[in-house]
Image 1: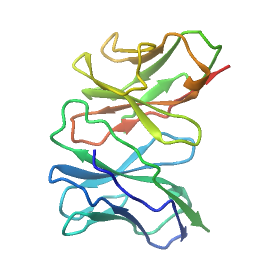
Image 2: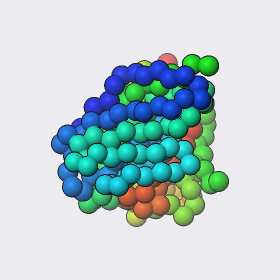
Image 3: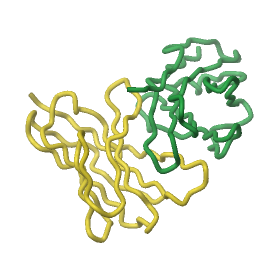
Image 4: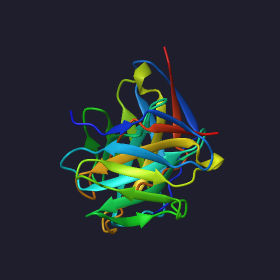
Length: 113
Length: 113
C-alpha cells in the first residue's frame, strides 16, 4: 500500500472547524483515500472515503487535491467527542480478497473546551 | 445500527496457555479481519478471511495463530501457546464488500502473565 504522511498531533477549540491534512504523493490511480479514527479505548471507526471528488457525509468532509497527492479531512464543528487519533489510509480497490487496512501513527486530535 | 461484538472484553492468561477470542461480525458481511494493537503502538493487521479461508496474513500471524468461522456467525482467533508479547488489544472487523468500510468491534484486551 502507498504511504501516507500526517502530522503527529493537532489541537482545536470546541465548536471550531478542524482541517486534518494527509500527504500521499505516491498514490496510484486505483487507491481510494480512507479516513478512520480511534477514540480512546475503542476500536477504529470509519469516517469517510473518496477517490477523486470531494465527499461529504454526516461525520465529515473530505477534500481531495486535484493531483490526488494530498487530502484534507474537515470536521466542521469539533466537539470534545471528536478527540481521537485520525488515520489516513490508502486502499487499492483492485487488490485481492485481503484488502487489509494498513494503519500508520495517525494524527492525535486534541479538542479544547 | 448493526455492530460487531467481541467477547470477552478482557482476558488474562498465563504464558503457554491457549486462548480463543470471539467475534460476531455483522450478519450479512462477507470479509472478516483480525487486527491487534500493542499498548501505545499502531494498529497492526493480522489476518483476513473470506469464503471460509484465509485470504491474507501478516508475518505476525505465525503457526501459533489460527482463525475459524465455526458456525456461520462467530469468527474466532486462537492463540495456541501465548507469549508475553501477545499482550495487546485484539480487534475484529468485518466488511460487506472489499471496497466498503470496515466495521470494527470494541476489542478484547489480552493480558499474558
